[in-house]
Amino acid sequence: MGRTPATHTNINSKRSPLGHSAPVFYTKCIRSSMCFSEEYFTDTTTRKASTDAANADGNKDTTATPAQPAKPRKVTTLTIAAKKRRGHKITMVTAYDYPSALHVDRAGIDVVLVGDSCAMVELGFDTTQPITLDQMIHHCQAVKRGAPNRPLLIGDMPFGSYEYENVDIALKNAYRMVKEGGMDAVKFEGGSESRAKIVRHVVEGGVAVLGHIGLTPQAISVLGGFRAQGRTALRARSLVDDALRLQEAGAFAIVLECIPANVAIAITQALDIPTIGIGAGGGCSGQVLVFHDLLGMTSHPHHEEFVPKFCKQYAKVGMEINDGLAQFKQEVEDGSFPGESYSPYIMMKEEEAIFDKLLKRDAEKERTTQDKVMEEEESLSLYGNGKTGQ
Image 1 (cartoon, rainbow, N blue to C red):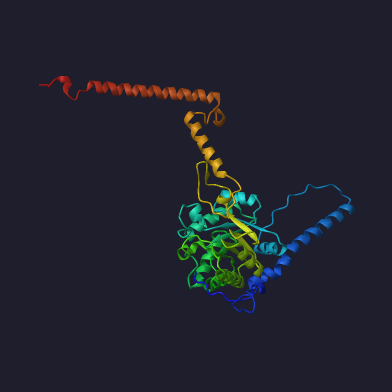
Image 2: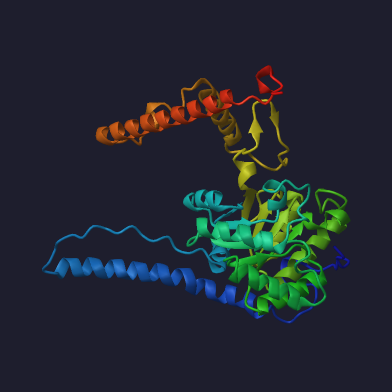
């Protein structure tokens, strides 16, 4: 990924090793505004409840009105920042389509990531590299329709859509993810100086950015495969610098993938912004898993598809799918489906009688036509009925 050599910076200082005097405006906004964002609404709600109670005591009309269900509050980058500050874990699930987004939203998950792993999980490719920006936007739109209001939606910028020296290309494509895909933020892989430059430019352009370091699948040709990262002291120290660099550039959070748990803890403690772990231990600010992996979508009675070592399966949905499909096949073949129970549409008796008469009349016309054809064929003899005609 072209990362710079590690610099021996005190990781507890929570400052960039690059020597910048102050973080960018976006990060400052998160730190200074988080107290206002959630506490303001909480205090306002409390004051309103107190006022309502006082009014109820002194109000002549004591008729109780039914309580209205509270509308779910939109999860934002400020919500995520406040969760880390308060020690509350962040939940994130990677989903790619309308039905999965619908389920994730109903479960109350904080963040939905439309990951470029869609290339492997949904489209059947061997790596994440083949998926295009247009394809990613297509899936982002589907997820947006499934979870339109509450969770924070993040679109993964695919390989080849942002890595150029001309940072305006990354900004232009990030705008497409927001405007066309309906995303609240985008995600970039890598923490090198050149990647931080891109992150800073996109954040300054008005698009929130989630960073991603450790195992970065888009760089599989450089990494030599899907391998855990940060298992040597120098490489781990370099990851700390990458994380600080991304924070300095304005990222609101960072995904830590496939790194030792102690390294993830060190990075999380060094940062003001949250970390989201996947195969990085329990010391991160939150956790993310892929929808299909955690639900066992590809599980089968006779074999198991590859599941990452770090993924806990909370269900065996694939087993249920297999059983359902097998039962459907059997019932269609033996004629028990659909049966009367699943054939609900009927005609009135009068209309059924008329319909039967029409079918009978059509059948009679067909027989008459066939009889005439047969008579004509019998009256003709291509071979002269055995006569030469001379």
